[in-house]
Image (cartoon, rainbow, N blue to C red; front, side, top):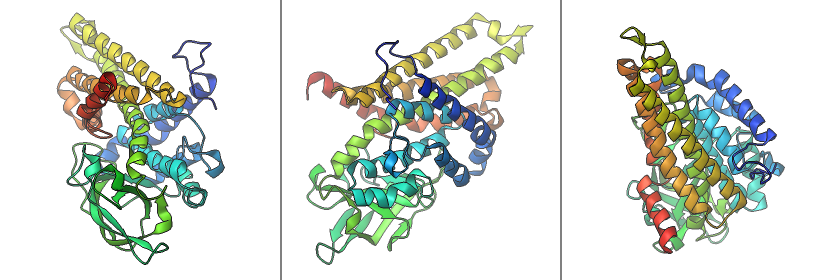
Length: 391
């Protein structure tokens, strides 16, 4: 499918296929995710069975080649999918996003043998994937990562990994880990990418982190202690890892922005319903002008976020020279703005917004981390500024 915006129509018109994708995803989210999201959050339950169901819809390889079971869609299509899933549960949607980022790296930078070995099971969701970049001592400074991979036994031998990855979504549950490791000199040129199976000798996982949000997906350290991984699992040769990591982030930033957008839409919908029902001083509280102004601002900011995100996704689909800048702008603006919308929705609920059963406080907790991951919003400003001043 051509995922680019049809120039013969308005830039922001979705084509018939894209509308169908959105409607299909909304129906799945309403039936299989939304009714259970609060329970998953409360119980910190990872619904791997329902996550795997999304493989039947093509969500295990949204922008992966069709020859290995992928859907072959574009980035705007993916944004529509993640937005719709996040309206039911941002944590659920974000995990699907991470899986797709890891699979895309194998599809884009793997050789044909690697693609055929890993991707059919990833696109079907028989296998789940996690992405491992951040370390205890390196977050925004990704090129400073310390996890080492040393070749043993000559050219045909294994890599032996030592180190740890921090804040890894799905750690311990995923079947495959796409990891950035150091095979050479300090800095970006010494970074490589390797695919690690869950049963690799020397691979273990830390304790589950007690997080503010995203309770339905486990976040743990991924630990390598003389972990042996076949050399044939290296993607694109030694030294290509930093390029692979940076290439994946443009799409990842759009995906997480889409998760924020879907969560904020849900928060606004809840606020509209609550303010129409709640009575104060003899009338529904949505009749008070102060609240009407707040709702108007929330809707305006939500639609501005949507237009910016869809534009950025279209640019990434068309591979325009400024696509990276627009991806950073969309990630920064949408995640900041949509968190504020969710927070405003909680305020409009008053004390009830603070209660778990209303679902608004969960959205606030889930959306907060989107301002941090896939590059903090401070780093997004650095990227945007460098594009502007030519550095």
